[in-house]
Image 1 (cartoon, rainbow, N blue to C red):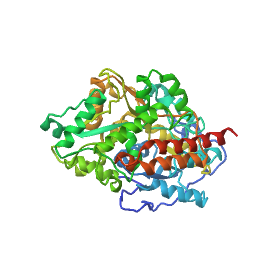
Image 2: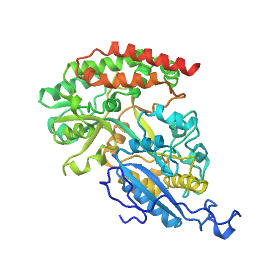
Image 3: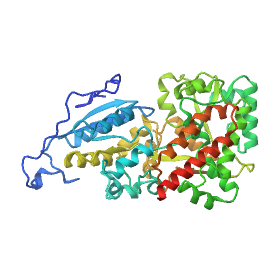
Image 4: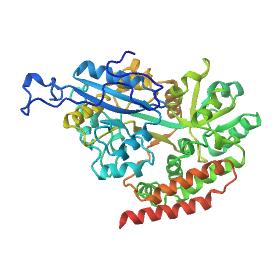
Length: 476
């Protein structure tokens, strides 16, 4: 795809892919532009050239959707161009720029992925380094016939969107799901159960697969939080409903209370430990990265992998022509009709750097709104492998058919089961270092627990002490 003002060199090692620099022409006059010199859609000047420096996280979704969005944006607003740094390690590069404290060298907007997660993002919001985008929910989309972003959002998206200190700082533009994605052809050839509805059926399936000499579930020990795609917080909600304490659990969860000591959390980790003792996960999983674990499924070495719906797009260059993706959730209950909880979240937004010129920030916000256009959303689904954030996306059957096979497999599972989506959003944030220490403790123990070599209970108890310390620090 031709791209004016932005190179597509993917082997840049995190260096800028355009030689335009970071120059932004400022208005030649302090007077407001004449009516004819502004865009009707947003009131911004047509005659002021702006270059937006973007830090783009190039990972499972690829870049084609983003390049398309930029192309169409520049066609509509030719005074705006982009200088993009594409990198799978854009978070590290952005963190380095933040530490350098050089506003001129900083990105105007950058993917909301930073090492340390919330612990790194909260100080940026508290210090006013990044712009709030909460107002964009009330902006009218460019192609919506007057409807706002909030009105177009799928039910629950506005309430469950990622926020920092109660505000949106990166308007989400795509949705995703996660769980166990599997080799459908392998399942069909062996007559394996593609839709186990109880924990007993799931364990029986895994034992059958293992007896055939195939790894039941692949996990990447080098990216330990990938286990959460199949066994994450959504499964705690599932157990809470089974236990008849949904409201109590949710109230605690949203505030980080009993994070690792709740009966549901302990039970989920006990189940992982149990599966590890049965040999359901790969030997030497600690050495696997996420693409290697996904490759095990493509090669027929493993039947399932804990990952997200982006897997099809991420692995497209390695996928055999006759391979078909299937999907299932891990059922934790004994009743086949009990609710199966799976991850359903929206993200993929961009932070906007507050110290940039006002016009740059305004155009960065306009581009974030532009990403909600239906044509962009279609490319996000077709080429990025993600779900649309718009409730009217599937109104057009041809457009809905652009959803990739892996996401369609999720839709098929939802159709055949009683499913609830959970994003895992919180009503508060924890900035104290003890919180990051707790996460580190869990992540460093995951491979041993999943290998059946580490009882999770002592780890959970220590992690809970750290969480309690972090909560206490927030309350001072």
